Length: 235
Image 1 (cartoon, rainbow, N blue to C red):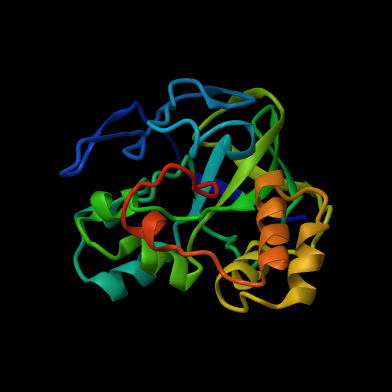
Image 2 (cartoon, one colour):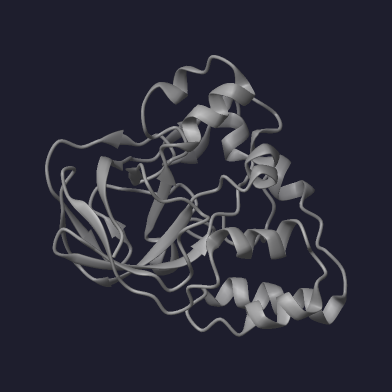
Protein backbone atom coordinates (compact mmCIF):
# COMPACT_ATOMS: atom_id res chain seq x y z
CA UNK A 1 0.00 0.00 0.00
CA UNK A 2 1.13 3.54 -0.73
CA UNK A 3 2.48 5.49 2.21
CA UNK A 4 4.10 8.92 2.05
CA UNK A 5 5.54 11.25 4.66
CA UNK A 6 4.01 14.68 5.16
CA UNK A 7 6.40 17.44 4.19
CA UNK A 8 4.14 20.05 5.77
CA UNK A 9 0.73 20.42 7.41
CA UNK A 10 -0.70 23.88 6.78
CA UNK A 11 -3.64 26.00 7.90
CA UNK A 12 -4.62 29.63 7.34
CA UNK A 13 -7.02 32.31 8.58
CA UNK A 14 -9.03 34.53 6.25
CA UNK A 15 -7.17 37.67 5.18
CA UNK A 16 -7.54 40.18 2.33
CA UNK A 17 -5.97 38.90 -0.89
CA UNK A 18 -4.34 40.89 -3.68
CA UNK A 19 -5.45 44.14 -5.25
CA UNK A 20 -9.12 43.31 -4.76
CA UNK A 21 -8.74 42.71 -1.05
CA UNK A 22 -10.94 39.65 -1.44
CA UNK A 23 -11.33 37.59 1.74
CA UNK A 24 -9.37 34.39 1.35
CA UNK A 25 -7.76 31.64 3.40
CA UNK A 26 -5.29 30.72 0.64
CA UNK A 27 -2.30 31.98 2.66
CA UNK A 28 -1.57 28.94 4.76
CA UNK A 29 1.38 28.40 7.07
CA UNK A 30 3.00 25.21 8.31
CA UNK A 31 2.14 24.17 11.86
CA UNK A 32 4.58 22.69 14.34
CA UNK A 33 2.25 20.38 16.23
CA UNK A 34 -0.88 18.24 15.91
CA UNK A 35 -4.17 19.80 14.79
CA UNK A 36 -7.69 18.42 15.11
CA UNK A 37 -9.28 17.42 11.81
CA UNK A 38 -13.06 17.70 11.77
CA UNK A 39 -15.64 16.98 9.06
CA UNK A 40 -15.23 20.45 7.53
CA UNK A 41 -11.45 20.72 7.88
CA UNK A 42 -8.64 21.46 10.30
CA UNK A 43 -9.15 23.59 13.38
CA UNK A 44 -7.95 27.10 12.61
CA UNK A 45 -8.25 26.70 8.84
CA UNK A 46 -10.69 29.12 7.19
CA UNK A 47 -12.18 29.91 3.78
CA UNK A 48 -13.12 33.37 2.62
CA UNK A 49 -15.93 32.07 0.42
CA UNK A 50 -17.53 29.05 2.13
CA UNK A 51 -20.05 28.64 -0.70
CA UNK A 52 -17.37 27.73 -3.27
CA UNK A 53 -14.51 26.66 -1.00
CA UNK A 54 -14.43 24.37 1.98
CA UNK A 55 -17.29 22.27 3.27
CA UNK A 56 -17.42 18.49 3.78
CA UNK A 57 -16.47 17.60 0.18
CA UNK A 58 -13.49 19.96 0.23
CA UNK A 59 -12.41 19.63 3.82
CA UNK A 60 -8.71 19.06 3.06
CA UNK A 61 -6.66 20.18 0.07
CA UNK A 62 -3.56 18.21 -0.98
CA UNK A 63 -0.95 19.55 -3.40
CA UNK A 64 2.10 17.54 -4.52
CA UNK A 65 5.36 19.26 -3.64
CA UNK A 66 7.05 17.77 -6.72
CA UNK A 67 4.97 20.13 -8.88
CA UNK A 68 6.89 23.09 -7.47
CA UNK A 69 9.95 22.31 -9.61
CA UNK A 70 7.79 22.27 -12.75
CA UNK A 71 6.26 25.61 -11.79
CA UNK A 72 9.70 27.11 -11.22
CA UNK A 73 10.66 26.04 -14.73
CA UNK A 74 7.45 27.54 -16.13
CA UNK A 75 7.40 30.78 -14.18
CA UNK A 76 10.98 31.51 -13.27
CA UNK A 77 11.90 32.79 -9.80
CA UNK A 78 8.81 32.97 -7.58
CA UNK A 79 9.04 33.74 -3.88
CA UNK A 80 5.92 31.69 -3.16
CA UNK A 81 7.52 28.51 -4.52
CA UNK A 82 10.26 28.53 -1.90
CA UNK A 83 8.20 26.50 0.56
CA UNK A 84 4.91 24.54 0.75
CA UNK A 85 1.68 26.52 0.83
CA UNK A 86 1.85 28.44 -2.45
CA UNK A 87 -1.41 26.89 -3.68
CA UNK A 88 -3.34 27.06 -0.42
CA UNK A 89 -2.81 23.39 0.33
CA UNK A 90 -3.28 21.75 3.73
CA UNK A 91 -1.16 18.68 2.95
CA UNK A 92 2.18 18.73 1.14
CA UNK A 93 3.95 15.52 0.14
CA UNK A 94 6.39 13.96 -2.28
CA UNK A 95 5.53 10.65 -3.90
CA UNK A 96 1.90 10.83 -5.07
CA UNK A 97 0.35 13.02 -7.75
CA UNK A 98 -2.89 13.29 -9.73
CA UNK A 99 -1.63 10.40 -11.84
CA UNK A 100 -1.57 8.05 -8.84
CA UNK A 101 -4.49 9.14 -6.68
CA UNK A 102 -8.06 8.14 -7.58
CA UNK A 103 -11.55 9.19 -6.58
CA UNK A 104 -12.59 7.20 -3.51
CA UNK A 105 -9.07 6.43 -2.35
CA UNK A 106 -9.14 6.21 1.45
CA UNK A 107 -6.10 7.25 3.47
CA UNK A 108 -5.23 7.12 7.14
CA UNK A 109 -3.34 10.09 8.54
CA UNK A 110 -2.68 10.45 12.25
CA UNK A 111 -5.84 9.18 13.92
CA UNK A 112 -8.07 10.43 11.09
CA UNK A 113 -9.32 8.78 7.90
CA UNK A 114 -9.91 10.78 4.71
CA UNK A 115 -11.19 9.99 1.20
CA UNK A 116 -10.42 11.61 -2.17
CA UNK A 117 -13.62 13.37 -3.28
CA UNK A 118 -12.67 15.52 -6.31
CA UNK A 119 -9.92 17.44 -8.04
CA UNK A 120 -9.45 21.15 -7.59
CA UNK A 121 -11.02 23.51 -10.06
CA UNK A 122 -8.73 26.59 -10.02
CA UNK A 123 -10.21 30.06 -9.77
CA UNK A 124 -9.01 33.65 -10.17
CA UNK A 125 -7.73 33.82 -6.57
CA UNK A 126 -4.63 32.00 -7.80
CA UNK A 127 -4.06 34.94 -10.16
CA UNK A 128 -4.11 37.31 -7.19
CA UNK A 129 -1.96 35.00 -5.12
CA UNK A 130 0.81 34.77 -7.72
CA UNK A 131 0.40 38.22 -9.24
CA UNK A 132 -0.11 36.61 -12.67
CA UNK A 133 -3.33 37.23 -14.63
CA UNK A 134 -3.39 33.72 -16.11
CA UNK A 135 -2.19 31.58 -13.21
CA UNK A 136 -5.55 29.83 -12.73
CA UNK A 137 -5.66 29.05 -16.44
CA UNK A 138 -2.12 27.66 -16.27
CA UNK A 139 -3.01 25.40 -13.33
CA UNK A 140 -6.09 24.11 -15.12
CA UNK A 141 -4.22 23.58 -18.39
CA UNK A 142 -1.35 21.62 -16.86
CA UNK A 143 -3.48 19.35 -14.69
CA UNK A 144 -1.26 20.21 -11.72
CA UNK A 145 -4.32 21.02 -9.65
CA UNK A 146 -4.10 18.96 -6.50
CA UNK A 147 -7.20 17.35 -5.01
CA UNK A 148 -9.63 17.41 -2.11
CA UNK A 149 -10.62 14.96 0.60
CA UNK A 150 -13.76 14.44 2.62
CA UNK A 151 -13.27 13.32 6.24
CA UNK A 152 -14.55 9.83 7.04
CA UNK A 153 -13.19 9.75 10.57
CA UNK A 154 -12.17 12.80 12.58
CA UNK A 155 -8.95 12.76 14.55
CA UNK A 156 -5.63 14.43 15.27
CA UNK A 157 -3.06 15.00 12.52
CA UNK A 158 0.53 16.11 13.05
CA UNK A 159 3.16 17.49 10.66
CA UNK A 160 5.35 14.38 11.03
CA UNK A 161 2.54 11.91 10.25
CA UNK A 162 2.39 9.62 7.25
CA UNK A 163 -0.44 9.41 4.73
CA UNK A 164 -1.21 5.74 4.13
CA UNK A 165 -3.56 4.33 1.49
CA UNK A 166 -5.89 1.72 3.01
CA UNK A 167 -8.67 1.24 0.43
CA UNK A 168 -9.53 2.03 -3.21
CA UNK A 169 -13.09 2.37 -4.52
CA UNK A 170 -12.42 3.35 -8.15
CA UNK A 171 -8.71 2.97 -8.92
CA UNK A 172 -9.23 3.55 -12.66
CA UNK A 173 -10.68 7.01 -12.01
CA UNK A 174 -7.54 8.91 -11.15
CA UNK A 175 -7.68 12.64 -10.52
CA UNK A 176 -5.73 13.03 -13.77
CA UNK A 177 -8.38 11.10 -15.72
CA UNK A 178 -11.17 13.25 -14.25
CA UNK A 179 -9.20 16.38 -15.20
CA UNK A 180 -8.80 15.08 -18.75
CA UNK A 181 -12.56 14.50 -19.09
CA UNK A 182 -13.44 17.99 -17.85
CA UNK A 183 -10.73 20.04 -19.55
CA UNK A 184 -9.13 18.13 -22.44
CA UNK A 185 -11.51 15.58 -23.97
CA UNK A 186 -14.43 17.75 -22.95
CA UNK A 187 -17.32 16.28 -24.95
CA UNK A 188 -16.49 12.59 -24.82
CA UNK A 189 -19.98 11.34 -24.00
CA UNK A 190 -18.82 7.89 -22.99
CA UNK A 191 -16.34 9.24 -20.48
CA UNK A 192 -18.80 11.83 -19.18
CA UNK A 193 -21.42 9.14 -18.66
CA UNK A 194 -18.97 6.88 -16.86
CA UNK A 195 -17.74 9.78 -14.74
CA UNK A 196 -21.28 10.67 -13.67
CA UNK A 197 -21.59 7.13 -12.31
CA UNK A 198 -18.46 7.19 -10.12
CA UNK A 199 -20.09 6.68 -6.74
CA UNK A 200 -17.54 8.42 -4.53
CA UNK A 201 -17.09 11.48 -6.75
CA UNK A 202 -18.45 14.65 -5.13
CA UNK A 203 -22.08 15.21 -6.11
CA UNK A 204 -21.35 18.63 -7.59
CA UNK A 205 -18.90 17.12 -10.06
CA UNK A 206 -21.22 14.26 -10.98
CA UNK A 207 -23.98 16.79 -11.67
CA UNK A 208 -21.55 18.85 -13.73
CA UNK A 209 -20.87 15.85 -15.97
CA UNK A 210 -24.62 15.29 -16.39
CA UNK A 211 -25.23 18.96 -17.28
CA UNK A 212 -22.60 18.75 -19.99
CA UNK A 213 -24.19 15.58 -21.33
CA UNK A 214 -27.60 17.27 -21.44
CA UNK A 215 -26.37 20.49 -23.07
CA UNK A 216 -23.84 18.94 -25.45
CA UNK A 217 -21.66 22.00 -24.84
CA UNK A 218 -18.71 23.03 -22.69
CA UNK A 219 -19.48 25.75 -20.17
CA UNK A 220 -17.68 29.10 -20.29
CA UNK A 221 -14.69 29.07 -17.92
CA UNK A 222 -13.75 32.73 -18.34
CA UNK A 223 -15.52 34.15 -15.30
CA UNK A 224 -14.11 31.54 -12.95
CA UNK A 225 -10.58 31.86 -14.26
CA UNK A 226 -10.56 35.65 -14.41
CA UNK A 227 -13.08 37.02 -11.92
CA UNK A 228 -15.60 35.89 -9.34
CA UNK A 229 -19.07 34.98 -10.50
CA UNK A 230 -22.34 34.32 -8.62
CA UNK A 231 -22.31 30.56 -9.23
CA UNK A 232 -19.43 28.22 -10.02
CA UNK A 233 -18.42 24.61 -9.87
CA UNK A 234 -16.45 23.88 -6.71
CA UNK A 235 -13.10 25.69 -6.65
